[in-house]
Structure formats: C-alpha cells, structure tokens
Length: 433
Image (cartoon, rainbow, N blue to C red; front, side, top):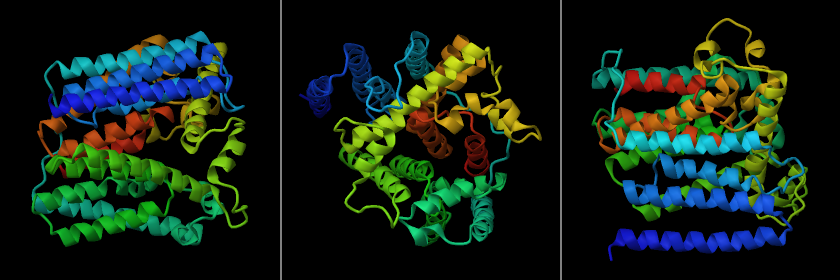
C-alpha cells in the first residue's frame, strides 16, 4: 500500500473517531437534534472535501482544504453555545448550503479546464527596478508608520498585554495611506522572491523582512499576521516543497499565535491573573457550557458571526434593501469621493459587524449573487492555485496567498472585494509579474 493511501486511511479514521467523540460530547450538553444533525452534516461535508482535495491535488494547502474550515465552522455554528447565537431560518440555511455547493462547483470546473492568466497592462520590471520599487513602497510604509505612531503617542509593542493599546489603535484615525502599512504583510514574500532570483543577498532580505515584521507587529492585527504567515509559507513552499508534517506543525503554530494574540489584546495589568483567557472569553461570549479554548473561539468567531449574518440578511429582506453590486464594487467605490456610510449602511455591514462572507453576495444580487459569486470565488482561487502549482510565475506566490487569506477569513467577513486586497494585487503585478 502506498504512503499516500496510508495517510488518507489514517485521515479518514481520525475524522470518524473525532466525529463520534464530538457528537457524543455535544449531545451530552443537551444540544437538540436540530443542532446536532446540521453540525454532523457540515462536518462530514468538510471532511469529505479535505480527503478528496488532498488525494486529488497531492497538496495539503489548496482551495478546498482551506474552504473546509469555513464549512466546518458553519456546521459548528448550529451548536448554540453562546447566548448571542440564534436559531437559523431556512433562507439563511439555504444561503449557506448554496454558498458551499457553488464554491466547490467553481473550483471543480477550474480544476478540469485550462488555466488562464490576465494580461499584464504594466510593463515587466527588470531585477533592479523590481527591488527599487519594493523598497519605495517599504519606505512609504515606514513613513506612514511613523506618522500614525506619532499620532498615537507610543509604540504599541512596548505595551504588550495592555488591553488599552488595542482600543487606542482602533480609535486612532488613519487615512487610506494605512494600506501601505498593511502591505508589509506580503512585502517579505516579495523580497524573498527577489532573494531567490539572486537580486539581493539573504542578509538584505532579513533586514527588510525585519522592518516589515516590526511594523505589522505593532498593530496587533491577527489578520495581518496570518496573511504574513500564509505568504511566507507559500513563498518558501514554491521553491522547496515543505513536508506535510511540517505544514501541520506550522498550521498548529498559526492557531496558537492567533489565540496568544487574542490573549494579549484582551488582557490588562488589572485583570485577575487567576482567570484564564478561556474563562474570560466564555464570560464575554455568554457561554455556560464547559467549552475548551478552541470551541470557545469557534463560538465567538464562528457561531456568533453566522448569527450576525442571519440577522443582516433577514433585515435586508424585511427592509427590501439591495446592494445592486455595491459590495462587489467596493474596491472602486472606496477610492471615489462619495459618502461611504450612505452606500454601506451599518445595519447591513458584514465587514463592520463580522457577518461572514455569505452576506455580501446576497445583499448585492440575492440568490443570483449567492450562486454566481461563489462559483466565481471557487473558480478564480482554483485557477490561481493551478498556476502556482505549475510554477508559471513567481507572481502567483502572492496572488495565491491572497486567495488563501480571503478563503480562510470567510467565517469573519468577505475580503474578496476589499480595496487593500486589490491594492496588493496591483503592487504584486507591478513588482513581480
């Protein structure tokens, strides 16, 4: 029996054991059949997608395995652990099901058809100009960083563990130039590409990567740090395939970092040190069940977010609200001198309220949006993955990383149409393509 088959059999066995244990655990919490059956159904769907994707593509990281995180979280959200959660109505359940089906359908169509790439409207830069351009955007980011830190009055990294820091950062007014700070999450991967091409030395790469790392560390944004990890992981794997065991360890490390950053953001010097972060989050989230830290986070950033998505879509239907493509066109509208609050009312803002990614397509075009946009997400992400896998160009290192990030964040909100994602695509296309 081949190693590949042994790994898959082991994976299926682990899934079956985990499903039995978790089903029994949540049943013991007096969860209803209406909660347990959807949980099990979505869990089995996520596991089937993972097994199929790993077997088919021979890669642990691919569009389907990343999207399986959303599928599983959607199922877990049916288990009502928090008093902030609510039971779903059938239209929202149908939105979830169609979103999953058509994302997978789009990915399958892309995997079975020819891969394509958009023509580059920018002239390709030579090695020296590419590095110079990246240095320029790094220096701009450093300037914006100094400006925002001066406005804040202190370096956040010097006050780790103080919850007031995160509040100060949220309240600190920023301009669109802040995107140059966020860009530092992918700049190290771009500099790494320059290093592997022989354009710069390893020492220069370490120096510029350290500057970018210092900048993003000061903003305590788990999303930015996760994107940094994804882009560097994909960059390294492009030139030297990382073993599955190491990928699992790195994935586990990302989860641990996510939790630790949450603890730093929510802790303060006045907190009772005997209170664990799990106890704090359970109390904050209104959870009375004996959840572990992962279940608490899945409830806080899964169940509650999906309940918010239900509230937003239900309210939009009741009010007769339609986005008519405004959410899909957010990158363009963001740079226009118009009243954004009028175009994106807070009541229907999945970005502000964290209502998962499924709400925006529905707000824009109702059921047609759910079907067509999810198909497009699956199709484009799989196409990017195929180009990356075929090593068509180093450009696809960052492009595929951005798709991974958007898919991974589906349980939070839709990043597919955020301006900074498009901005990153443009910078990447100028520097690397």
